[in-house]
Structure formats: C-alpha cells, structure tokens
Image 1 (cartoon, rainbow, N blue to C red):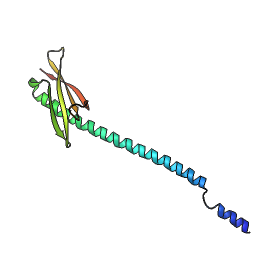
Image 2 (tube, rainbow, N blue to C red):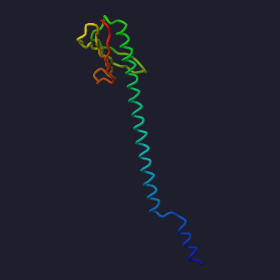
Image 3 (tube, one colour):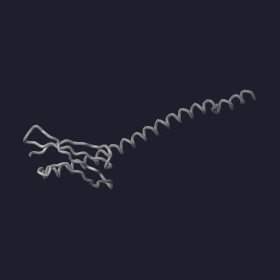
Image 4 (tube, rainbow, N blue to C red):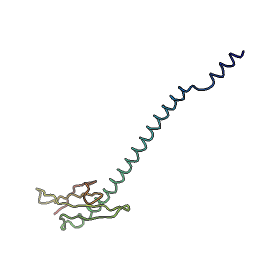
Length: 124
C-alpha cells in the first residue's frame, strides 16, 4: 500500500526536464512577440515620416501651381507636426514648350537624403 501511494505522489508534479522544455517554449514565443512588436513600431514611425513629408511636398507643389512664373531652384523649411522639414524645388528641363517640370524633395535635415521626391508639371 505504501509503495503505490509513493508512486502516485511522484507522478503528480512536473519533472525538471518538463519545466525546462516549457520555459524554452515560452522564451521562444516571447522573443517572437517582441520582434513583431518592434517591427510594427519601426514601420509606424517610417509611415508617419513618409506621410508628413508627402504633406510638405503637397504644400510646396501647391505654391508652385499658384505662381508658375516664379519657378526656380529654391530651398526652405516648413514646420509640420512639431518637426522642421527641409524642402527643395528643382526645375527639370523638358522638350515640350507648353509644360515646365519640377521636382519637390523633402528631407528631415538639411543634408539628409530626401524622404520623398515628387515630380510634377505646370503650364508655362
């Protein structure tokens, strides 16, 4: 009687090996979740930057559309979403006498590569 009672007590708990395997599975799952969340946060900040830069491009394109006769290479800054955005308008030569082309580039700092560059056309 005592022996069967002793065996039933041993089978109730988990062995050390089972605990270590469960811990390894949990750690792997936790690392995967952390990586997914980190990637999601990085993607959100990238999309936010692109969206605000596109808004600055739209603003500068509208200014050129309103005054096409003033189209020349210009640079400036615009504050949007509590950040300074550095934009550049660059005329592009065209073979057509009816249209003028221009590029608008927006960067996060003066010497940084552009976040967004858009080409548009305006009538002469």
